[in-house]
Length: 561
Ligand code: AMP
Image (cartoon, rainbow, N blue to C red; front, side, top):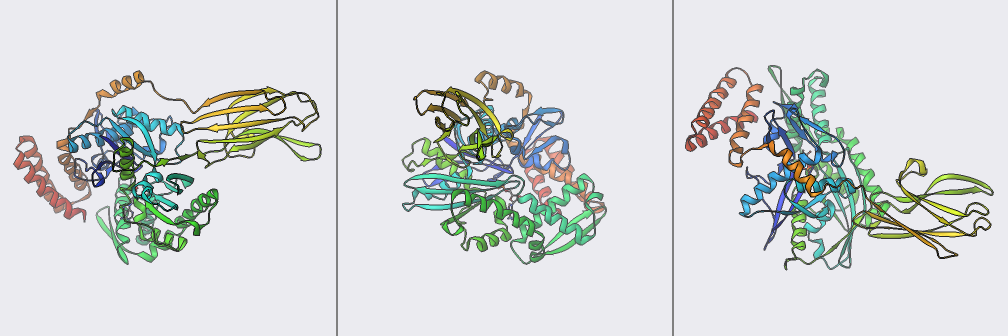
């Protein structure tokens, strides 16, 4: 069986295809969402998901999160003295999901379709693929997140051509994609986004609003205080969509501070963030050559689209109710599972052709004549524009700029600047042309860019038909099978925690944190229950463990209110 995986910035999910359609596989704690958080302690014990996140306030130096943002870069994360690349941390999340799926389905999983943001360039896609390989998963196909969302919404089943906008506001990133379903081809027409906007910004607004109302200052809070403040702000943010106001509490020193925050106050405080949302929406529509009113459907994905202020904003913007029949956290994983079923050629799904877009502009350097006889060189001439659907092939005819010019040099560049020097140089080709007065001779420059990031450049002299070609491969930082095997071996010192004790570990961590946060009698009471649970764990009596854990859990629930 091939599974579908949404490897998210904040949370990850794994899904499989059943006769009734795609379904999410719960993790070892019985939850659908596994936080994309990894923690490694000094001894090399690895914790993934909720347990890792719980370690954040107690052992901040041992925890990494949001590493998806650094995929494909050389960034190194130091966790308790062990060093990891972003794809290695991602591989630990993937491995945990793979194990959960194997235990749930009772079979070995060796292949997955993994979703990636539409704007991920080749380098980041390859890093994602490597993460899969390091986790023992073959990743032959990746699906872009908005495409997965569209697939999950069953838009591929539609007979009518549809244009839709996928609005994805996750924890730390914001992506807008315009897609079009046309004659059974699902095409990403344009993507835009903001890499520094997401649900966490909305949490920050809540935290600041609280500080403002209670007269506290962020600078005066310790690191641990801040972690706690954000946790409370996160809770308040998630609750505020359900009513007119929320009460947020925060333990500062020995005193519990409490403030009421109304939905209206919060909305006003978020105004700047809402304005930021508008820009990528406009840009993606402009790139796709569409107006707001051309959009037939708006699909919401990403946890932060649960915020009612975001939904209301979109309703006002599009004058349309977004489609919300699927859980916004789960849509992408479900779509990836459908894609996995397509790859397996399952009868239940009809194969749709999914295309992708080029996320940057490819062009060449030219000389422009801005006035009779006056030239400016070093200008950039786009050939395949950003957001062009790939595979794509475009030709541009370029003329000689000087009398008796005997050669034309095509410098291949990537980027968005009007000036060649600001764009990325990929390679160059030179070809002879017959000497003639300027502007008489010309060459046709054809760029062909395919889905595997191969760019073929062809230059043809129009008068003589002489042709030269070259192929530029996308950033090639692929690891060979041996390199992957070696790195897996190197990482094998890491001790992956046994699945069955996950819940015990999580409860203990939560209790430890709560112990730090409480005082006096509450602390004593907590200590009593922790000790009972620890004693049971030491004895190894299953019944006693379950019993004391439940008791402790109950106390924690009460304290965490
Ligand atoms: P994602 O990266 O898609 O998992 O989205 C995570 C973001 O969604 C985080 O910033 C969460 O705080 C946010 N989120 C999850 N549930 C809710 C909710 N009910 N209301 C507001 N934001 C939420």
